[in-house]
Image (cartoon, rainbow, N blue to C red; front, side, top):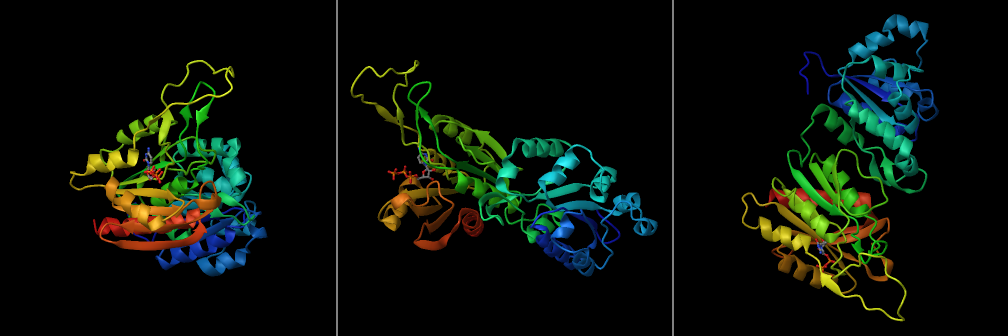
Amino acid sequence: MTQHIHPPQILVGVSGGIAAYKACELVRELKRAGCAVRVVMTSAAQAFVTPLTFQALSGEPVRTGLLDAEAESGMDHIALARWADQVIVAPASADLMARMAHGHADDLLTTLLLATTAPVTLAPAMNHQMWAHPATRANLALLQERGVNVLGPDAGAQACGEQGPGRMREPVEIARALLHPGTGPLSGRHVVITAGPTQEPIDPVRYIGNRSSGRMGLALAAAAQAAGARVTLVHGPVALPLPTGVRAVPAETAAAMHAAVLGHLDDCDVFIGAAAVADYRPASPCAQKMKKDADTRALELERTEDILADVARRVRDRSPRPLVVGFAAETSQLRHYARSKLETKGLDLIAANDVSAGRAIGTDDNALLCLWPGGGERSLPHQPKAALARMLIELVVERLDKH
Ligand code: CTP
């Protein structure tokens, strides 16, 4: 961060959304860290939290309008834009991002965002469908291209009752990223994660796939990133939006995923195999679409590469050796099979989940039994996958410390 002779001066922009209440916590965190904080609210934000709340928390008058003669005579909007060492918009709504991407200056916050030369960070929060909408994706891409930092959003339970990526990142984590970039427990670390299903072609239009949504792997990528890691996410075909700020490498088949992983292993500190990789693929996929010219048909399958086992094997003699983490999906004798996978694949940690009776795969919630060599284990209780991913990343940090 830039060195200041004065305490860091942070302008917090609050746009309209239920996560506006979390901005109160952010202001408190920043004040606690010794920052001078000024808050600017959009008119929609005031439907959720009153300016008085932010005034009490920041100890400064809160600005809400562009054409407020009295406020402008104190510190006009250009002076306010210059005052800021950093600008954080939390929550950043879909509308705010759209107005910002298109250079609108139709209220005080968007005007300040055009006028400031300070680094700008957004902490988006919105319904997950709005976050996934192509318009929002395009605005996000444009803003990132112009150098705007984006923190989150994280996946999890939303105020609308749905699950998905769209929750504002936790205020403590936003404050840490603003004030002490690169100090998360995984900062300086490169985490490579596989996620989602693979699709193994039978012919040009058919494939063997599975029910994995990629939700757990994506949540792990977001959690590792929030912990400060540089993340490479090698993912199969997934419908969910990918976390911002991670390097995403698409791979459709087990073979493509294997090649992509090997291409990112050189400086890897942690490898997490969360993908549901096909164990078998059609031995000779047809070049032409197969015709229904027989009553029965047999499909010859051959084994795919075991990416996780291969990674563990390849890094075995490295120093320092990356931490290799795998998953085990079992329908019975969870602990027994998971421990034997841990040993045979040569892993440092395995997260086992019970996939009997439609549990875990393609769902929002899960529970994990985590095992590591030497007999250690920890149960992570049943909860939404985003929260579970954060707990698993905490365990990865612990295991890495003892590695
Ligand atoms: N995995 C992998 N490459 C494969 C198959 C699995 O990297 N070709 C990884 C998965 O990402 C997961 C772990 O291996 O981290 C365990 O996968 P699972 O399907 O539970 O076990 P398998 O080893 O495939 O054994 P089995 O199917 O016999 O239970």
